[in-house]
Amino acid sequence: MGTFTCLSIFVLILFSFGINAKHLGTRQWILKLPLMEQNNQEPFEKAPYFTNIKKMRKVIVKPAGAFLVLKCKADGYPTPNITWYRNNEKPIRRLGNIQYTRWSLNLEDLTTDDCGTYKCVVCNALGCLDFNYTLDVVENFAARPLLIERPHNRTVAVGSNVGFKCRFLSDLHYHMYWMKGIPSENSTVVEHIVSEDPEILELHSVTHESEGWYTCVAANTVGVTGASAYLEVFSANLSVVNNTTTIC
Ligand SMILES: *[C@@H]1O[C@H](CO)[C@@H](O)[C@H](O)[C@H]1NC(C)=O
Ligand SMILES: *[C@@H]1O[C@H](CO)[C@@H](O)[C@H](O)[C@H]1NC(C)=O
Ligand SMILES: *[C@@H]1O[C@H](CO)[C@@H](O)[C@H](O)[C@H]1NC(C)=O
Ligand SMILES: *[C@@H]1O[C@H](CO)[C@@H](O)[C@H](O)[C@H]1NC(C)=O
Ligand SMILES: *[C@@H]1O[C@H](CO)[C@@H](O)[C@H](O)[C@H]1NC(C)=O
Ligand SMILES: *[C@@H]1O[C@H](CO)[C@@H](O)[C@H](O)[C@H]1NC(C)=O
Ligand SMILES: *[C@@H]1O[C@H](CO)[C@@H](O)[C@H](O)[C@H]1NC(C)=O
Image (tube, rainbow, N blue to C red; front, side, top):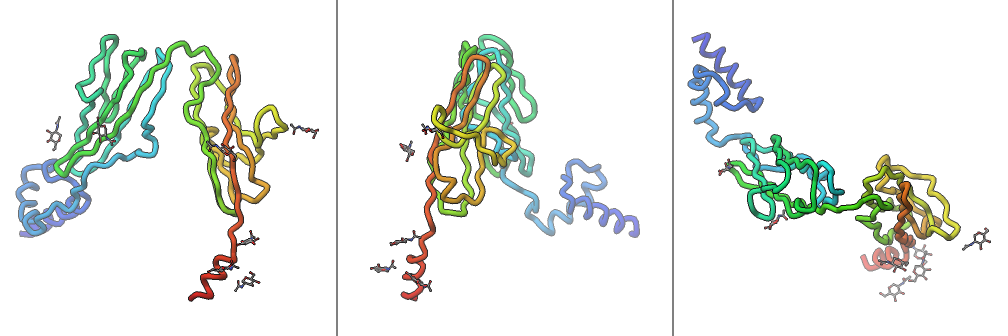
Protein backbone atom coordinates (compact mmCIF):
# COMPACT_ATOMS: atom_id res chain seq x y z
CA MET A 1 0.00 0.00 0.00
CA GLY A 2 2.82 2.35 0.94
CA THR A 3 4.54 1.66 -2.38
CA PHE A 4 1.30 2.28 -4.23
CA THR A 5 0.79 5.72 -2.64
CA CYS A 6 4.38 6.60 -3.27
CA LEU A 7 4.12 5.64 -6.94
CA SER A 8 0.81 7.46 -7.28
CA ILE A 9 2.39 10.64 -6.00
CA PHE A 10 5.30 10.09 -8.35
CA VAL A 11 2.92 9.68 -11.29
CA LEU A 12 0.88 12.65 -10.13
CA ILE A 13 4.04 14.78 -10.17
CA LEU A 14 4.99 13.55 -13.63
CA PHE A 15 1.43 14.14 -14.73
CA SER A 16 1.44 17.69 -13.49
CA PHE A 17 4.62 18.33 -15.47
CA GLY A 18 2.77 17.33 -18.59
CA ILE A 19 4.48 14.05 -19.35
CA ASN A 20 2.40 11.89 -21.64
CA ALA A 21 1.21 8.68 -20.05
CA LYS A 22 2.15 6.71 -23.16
CA HIS A 23 5.79 7.50 -22.50
CA LEU A 24 5.72 5.91 -19.08
CA GLY A 25 6.23 2.25 -18.32
CA THR A 26 3.36 -0.24 -18.13
CA ARG A 27 3.21 -0.08 -14.35
CA GLN A 28 2.78 3.66 -14.28
CA TRP A 29 0.24 3.47 -17.09
CA ILE A 30 -2.02 1.24 -15.02
CA LEU A 31 -1.67 3.53 -12.03
CA LYS A 32 -2.42 6.56 -14.11
CA LEU A 33 -5.76 5.38 -15.46
CA PRO A 34 -7.80 6.23 -12.33
CA LEU A 35 -6.27 9.72 -12.41
CA MET A 36 -7.29 10.11 -16.05
CA GLU A 37 -10.85 9.22 -15.13
CA GLN A 38 -10.94 11.76 -12.34
CA ASN A 39 -10.16 14.73 -14.57
CA ASN A 40 -11.48 13.27 -17.77
CA GLN A 41 -10.37 16.13 -20.01
CA GLU A 42 -6.69 16.33 -20.94
CA PRO A 43 -5.52 19.46 -19.17
CA PHE A 44 -2.70 20.14 -21.63
CA GLU A 45 -4.53 19.90 -24.92
CA LYS A 46 -3.69 22.83 -27.12
CA ALA A 47 -4.40 23.49 -30.78
CA PRO A 48 -1.31 23.94 -32.99
CA TYR A 49 0.35 27.35 -33.09
CA PHE A 50 3.45 28.70 -34.81
CA THR A 51 6.17 29.43 -32.28
CA ASN A 52 8.08 31.91 -34.47
CA ILE A 53 5.28 33.61 -36.38
CA LYS A 54 7.06 36.99 -36.20
CA LYS A 55 9.98 35.61 -38.17
CA MET A 56 7.81 34.03 -40.87
CA ARG A 57 7.82 36.33 -43.89
CA LYS A 58 5.12 35.72 -46.46
CA VAL A 59 7.15 36.80 -49.46
CA ILE A 60 10.62 35.45 -50.03
CA VAL A 61 12.83 36.58 -52.87
CA LYS A 62 16.07 34.67 -53.41
CA PRO A 63 18.76 34.77 -56.06
CA ALA A 64 19.17 31.66 -58.22
CA GLY A 65 21.67 29.23 -56.74
CA ALA A 66 20.85 30.19 -53.16
CA PHE A 67 19.90 27.81 -50.37
CA LEU A 68 16.36 28.12 -49.05
CA VAL A 69 15.05 27.14 -45.63
CA LEU A 70 11.33 27.53 -45.03
CA LYS A 71 10.45 27.09 -41.37
CA CYS A 72 7.07 26.46 -39.79
CA LYS A 73 8.06 25.62 -36.25
CA ALA A 74 4.90 24.74 -34.40
CA ASP A 75 3.85 23.52 -31.00
CA GLY A 76 0.67 22.26 -29.42
CA TYR A 77 -0.52 19.23 -27.50
CA PRO A 78 -0.52 16.57 -28.80
CA THR A 79 2.58 17.66 -30.75
CA PRO A 80 1.36 18.58 -34.24
CA ASN A 81 2.52 16.91 -37.44
CA ILE A 82 3.53 18.94 -40.47
CA THR A 83 2.76 18.54 -44.17
CA TRP A 84 4.19 20.69 -46.97
CA TYR A 85 2.59 21.60 -50.27
CA ARG A 86 3.81 23.52 -53.27
CA ASN A 87 0.98 25.15 -55.23
CA ASN A 88 -1.37 22.84 -53.29
CA GLU A 89 0.42 19.66 -54.39
CA LYS A 90 3.10 17.46 -52.91
CA PRO A 91 6.35 19.32 -53.56
CA ILE A 92 8.49 17.89 -56.35
CA ARG A 93 11.59 19.26 -58.08
CA ARG A 94 12.89 18.58 -61.54
CA LEU A 95 16.40 19.58 -60.49
CA GLY A 96 17.79 18.83 -57.07
CA ASN A 97 16.31 17.38 -53.91
CA ILE A 98 13.98 18.53 -51.24
CA GLN A 99 15.20 17.99 -47.71
CA TYR A 100 12.89 18.02 -44.77
CA THR A 101 13.80 18.50 -41.15
CA ARG A 102 11.28 18.30 -38.32
CA TRP A 103 9.85 21.79 -39.00
CA SER A 104 11.49 22.94 -42.20
CA LEU A 105 11.67 22.39 -45.92
CA ASN A 106 15.08 23.01 -47.49
CA LEU A 107 15.95 23.56 -51.13
CA GLU A 108 19.53 23.67 -52.32
CA ASP A 109 20.66 25.49 -55.43
CA LEU A 110 17.42 27.33 -56.24
CA THR A 111 16.29 27.78 -59.82
CA THR A 112 13.40 29.81 -61.23
CA ASP A 113 11.51 26.48 -61.48
CA ASP A 114 11.21 26.53 -57.70
CA CYS A 115 9.00 29.65 -57.65
CA GLY A 116 5.55 29.21 -56.22
CA THR A 117 3.52 29.10 -53.04
CA TYR A 118 4.78 26.76 -50.36
CA LYS A 119 2.24 25.92 -47.72
CA CYS A 120 2.91 24.20 -44.44
CA VAL A 121 -0.01 22.64 -42.60
CA VAL A 122 0.41 21.70 -38.96
CA CYS A 123 -2.25 19.50 -37.39
CA ASN A 124 -3.07 17.77 -34.17
CA ALA A 125 -6.29 16.26 -32.84
CA LEU A 126 -7.64 19.75 -32.10
CA GLY A 127 -7.21 21.18 -35.56
CA CYS A 128 -4.93 22.49 -38.26
CA LEU A 129 -3.13 25.71 -39.00
CA ASP A 130 -1.42 26.73 -42.22
CA PHE A 131 1.02 29.31 -43.54
CA ASN A 132 1.78 30.26 -47.15
CA TYR A 133 5.25 31.28 -48.26
CA THR A 134 5.48 32.84 -51.70
CA LEU A 135 8.89 32.20 -53.22
CA ASP A 136 10.34 34.20 -56.05
CA VAL A 137 13.71 33.21 -57.51
CA VAL A 138 15.54 35.89 -59.44
CA GLU A 139 18.42 35.35 -61.84
CA ASN A 140 21.40 37.55 -62.69
CA PHE A 141 21.88 39.29 -59.45
CA ALA A 142 25.20 40.98 -60.11
CA ALA A 143 23.33 44.24 -59.89
CA ARG A 144 22.80 47.06 -57.45
CA PRO A 145 20.59 46.14 -54.48
CA LEU A 146 16.97 45.55 -55.41
CA LEU A 147 14.31 47.17 -53.24
CA ILE A 148 11.77 44.55 -52.19
CA GLU A 149 9.96 46.44 -49.42
CA ARG A 150 9.67 50.19 -49.39
CA PRO A 151 9.07 52.42 -46.36
CA HIS A 152 5.58 53.92 -45.96
CA ASN A 153 4.57 57.51 -45.16
CA ARG A 154 3.58 57.95 -41.55
CA THR A 155 1.56 60.58 -39.69
CA VAL A 156 1.97 60.58 -35.92
CA ALA A 157 1.39 62.84 -32.91
CA VAL A 158 4.23 64.66 -31.16
CA GLY A 159 5.88 62.35 -28.62
CA SER A 160 5.01 59.11 -30.45
CA ASN A 161 7.41 56.39 -31.49
CA VAL A 162 7.48 55.52 -35.15
CA GLY A 163 9.24 52.95 -37.31
CA PHE A 164 10.18 52.76 -40.97
CA LYS A 165 11.14 49.57 -42.72
CA CYS A 166 13.03 48.80 -45.91
CA ARG A 167 14.20 45.53 -47.42
CA PHE A 168 16.71 44.98 -50.17
CA LEU A 169 17.99 41.97 -52.00
CA SER A 170 21.48 41.59 -53.33
CA ASP A 171 23.66 38.59 -53.96
CA LEU A 172 26.69 40.78 -53.41
CA HIS A 173 27.54 41.97 -49.94
CA TYR A 174 25.81 45.28 -49.29
CA HIS A 175 25.78 47.99 -46.69
CA MET A 176 22.57 49.60 -45.53
CA TYR A 177 21.89 52.84 -43.69
CA TRP A 178 19.24 55.52 -43.11
CA MET A 179 19.38 59.21 -43.88
CA LYS A 180 17.18 62.14 -43.02
CA GLY A 181 16.16 63.92 -46.20
CA ILE A 182 16.11 62.87 -49.83
CA PRO A 183 19.41 61.88 -51.43
CA SER A 184 20.94 64.51 -53.72
CA GLU A 185 19.48 67.24 -51.55
CA ASN A 186 21.23 68.35 -48.39
CA SER A 187 20.56 65.11 -46.65
CA THR A 188 22.21 64.16 -43.43
CA VAL A 189 22.78 60.69 -42.05
CA VAL A 190 20.33 60.07 -39.25
CA GLU A 191 22.29 59.82 -36.02
CA HIS A 192 19.86 58.03 -33.76
CA ILE A 193 19.44 54.58 -35.24
CA VAL A 194 18.11 52.69 -32.27
CA SER A 195 17.44 49.35 -33.89
CA GLU A 196 20.19 46.79 -34.29
CA ASP A 197 18.41 45.71 -37.46
CA PRO A 198 19.47 48.03 -40.31
CA GLU A 199 16.23 47.24 -42.15
CA ILE A 200 14.31 49.13 -39.47
CA LEU A 201 14.61 52.75 -38.40
CA GLU A 202 13.01 53.53 -35.06
CA LEU A 203 12.37 57.08 -33.93
CA HIS A 204 11.38 57.65 -30.33
CA SER A 205 9.38 60.60 -28.95
CA VAL A 206 9.21 62.50 -32.22
CA THR A 207 9.06 66.31 -32.25
CA HIS A 208 8.12 68.76 -35.01
CA GLU A 209 11.80 68.77 -35.97
CA SER A 210 11.51 65.05 -36.75
CA GLU A 211 9.08 65.79 -39.57
CA GLY A 212 10.48 65.29 -43.05
CA TRP A 213 11.79 62.70 -45.47
CA TYR A 214 13.62 59.57 -44.36
CA THR A 215 15.56 57.51 -46.83
CA CYS A 216 16.94 54.02 -46.61
CA VAL A 217 19.98 53.37 -48.74
CA ALA A 218 21.64 50.12 -49.74
CA ALA A 219 24.96 50.08 -51.53
CA ASN A 220 27.04 47.28 -53.02
CA THR A 221 30.01 47.35 -55.39
CA VAL A 222 27.70 47.74 -58.40
CA GLY A 223 25.56 50.62 -57.20
CA VAL A 224 23.25 52.30 -54.74
CA THR A 225 19.49 52.00 -54.27
CA GLY A 226 17.38 54.20 -52.03
CA ALA A 227 13.74 54.69 -51.08
CA SER A 228 12.10 57.49 -49.09
CA ALA A 229 9.03 58.07 -46.98
CA TYR A 230 7.61 61.15 -45.32
CA LEU A 231 7.05 61.55 -41.61
CA GLU A 232 4.36 64.04 -40.67
CA VAL A 233 4.16 65.09 -37.04
CA PHE A 234 1.05 66.78 -35.66
CA SER A 235 0.32 68.40 -32.30
CA ALA A 236 -2.10 66.73 -30.01
CA ASN A 237 -4.70 69.49 -29.98
CA LEU A 238 -5.95 70.14 -26.48
CA SER A 239 -8.98 72.24 -27.49
CA VAL A 240 -10.79 69.04 -28.43
CA VAL A 241 -10.18 67.61 -24.97
CA ASN A 242 -11.29 70.92 -23.58
CA ASN A 243 -14.62 70.74 -25.40
CA THR A 244 -15.29 67.12 -24.47
CA THR A 245 -14.64 67.80 -20.82
CA THR A 246 -17.14 70.68 -20.76
CA ILE A 247 -19.81 68.37 -22.28
CA CYS A 248 -19.28 65.88 -19.46
C1 LIG B 1 -1.67 14.67 -38.84
O1 LIG B 1 -2.49 14.70 -37.70
C2 LIG B 1 -3.88 14.75 -38.01
C3 LIG B 1 -4.65 14.97 -36.72
O2 LIG B 1 -4.17 14.19 -35.68
C4 LIG B 1 -4.28 13.49 -38.73
O3 LIG B 1 -5.67 13.53 -39.07
C5 LIG B 1 -3.46 13.38 -40.00
O4 LIG B 1 -3.74 12.16 -40.66
C6 LIG B 1 -1.96 13.47 -39.69
N1 LIG B 1 -1.27 13.58 -40.96
C7 LIG B 1 -0.16 12.89 -41.22
C8 LIG B 1 0.46 13.11 -42.55
O5 LIG B 1 0.35 12.15 -40.40
C1 LIG C 1 -2.95 29.69 -47.97
O1 LIG C 1 -3.40 29.56 -49.30
C2 LIG C 1 -4.58 28.76 -49.44
C3 LIG C 1 -4.89 28.67 -50.91
O2 LIG C 1 -3.87 28.05 -51.59
C4 LIG C 1 -5.72 29.37 -48.67
O3 LIG C 1 -6.84 28.53 -48.72
C5 LIG C 1 -5.30 29.56 -47.22
O4 LIG C 1 -6.31 30.23 -46.50
C6 LIG C 1 -4.01 30.34 -47.13
N1 LIG C 1 -3.58 30.40 -45.74
C7 LIG C 1 -3.30 31.52 -45.11
C8 LIG C 1 -2.88 31.40 -43.70
O5 LIG C 1 -3.39 32.62 -45.65
C1 LIG D 1 22.33 72.82 -49.49
O1 LIG D 1 22.99 73.54 -48.48
C2 LIG D 1 23.66 74.69 -48.97
C3 LIG D 1 24.42 75.31 -47.80
O2 LIG D 1 23.78 75.08 -46.58
C4 LIG D 1 22.62 75.64 -49.55
O3 LIG D 1 23.27 76.78 -50.06
C5 LIG D 1 21.86 74.94 -50.66
O4 LIG D 1 20.83 75.76 -51.16
C6 LIG D 1 21.26 73.66 -50.16
N1 LIG D 1 20.66 72.93 -51.26
C7 LIG D 1 19.44 72.42 -51.21
C8 LIG D 1 18.99 71.70 -52.44
O5 LIG D 1 18.71 72.54 -50.23
C1 LIG E 1 4.24 60.57 -49.01
O1 LIG E 1 4.19 61.89 -48.54
C2 LIG E 1 4.71 62.84 -49.46
C3 LIG E 1 4.74 64.21 -48.78
O2 LIG E 1 3.54 64.51 -48.15
C4 LIG E 1 3.86 62.85 -50.73
O3 LIG E 1 4.40 63.76 -51.67
C5 LIG E 1 3.87 61.44 -51.30
O4 LIG E 1 3.00 61.40 -52.44
C6 LIG E 1 3.41 60.45 -50.28
N1 LIG E 1 3.56 59.13 -50.82
C7 LIG E 1 2.62 58.20 -50.72
C8 LIG E 1 2.92 56.88 -51.34
O5 LIG E 1 1.56 58.42 -50.16
C1 LIG F 1 -5.97 73.52 -32.13
O1 LIG F 1 -7.06 73.70 -33.05
C2 LIG F 1 -7.50 75.05 -33.15
C3 LIG F 1 -8.68 75.08 -34.10
O2 LIG F 1 -9.59 74.05 -33.81
C4 LIG F 1 -6.38 75.93 -33.61
O3 LIG F 1 -6.81 77.27 -33.64
C5 LIG F 1 -5.19 75.79 -32.67
O4 LIG F 1 -4.10 76.54 -33.17
C6 LIG F 1 -4.78 74.35 -32.54
N1 LIG F 1 -3.72 74.25 -31.55
C7 LIG F 1 -2.57 73.64 -31.78
C8 LIG F 1 -1.60 73.60 -30.65
O5 LIG F 1 -2.30 73.10 -32.85
C1 LIG G 1 -15.95 73.37 -29.27
O1 LIG G 1 -16.94 72.73 -30.04
C2 LIG G 1 -17.84 73.60 -30.73
C3 LIG G 1 -18.87 72.76 -31.44
O2 LIG G 1 -19.31 71.73 -30.61
C4 LIG G 1 -17.06 74.48 -31.69
O3 LIG G 1 -17.94 75.39 -32.30
C5 LIG G 1 -15.97 75.22 -30.95
O4 LIG G 1 -15.17 75.94 -31.88
C6 LIG G 1 -15.11 74.26 -30.18
N1 LIG G 1 -14.10 74.99 -29.42
C7 LIG G 1 -12.81 74.82 -29.55
C8 LIG G 1 -11.96 75.63 -28.67
O5 LIG G 1 -12.32 73.98 -30.34
C1 LIG H 1 -9.59 75.31 -22.55
O1 LIG H 1 -9.03 75.92 -23.68
C2 LIG H 1 -8.65 77.25 -23.47
C3 LIG H 1 -8.17 77.84 -24.77
O2 LIG H 1 -8.93 77.34 -25.83
C4 LIG H 1 -7.59 77.34 -22.37
O3 LIG H 1 -7.27 78.68 -22.10
C5 LIG H 1 -8.11 76.67 -21.13
O4 LIG H 1 -7.08 76.61 -20.17
C6 LIG H 1 -8.59 75.27 -21.42
N1 LIG H 1 -9.16 74.66 -20.25
C7 LIG H 1 -8.80 73.45 -19.82
C8 LIG H 1 -9.50 72.96 -18.59
O5 LIG H 1 -7.97 72.76 -20.39
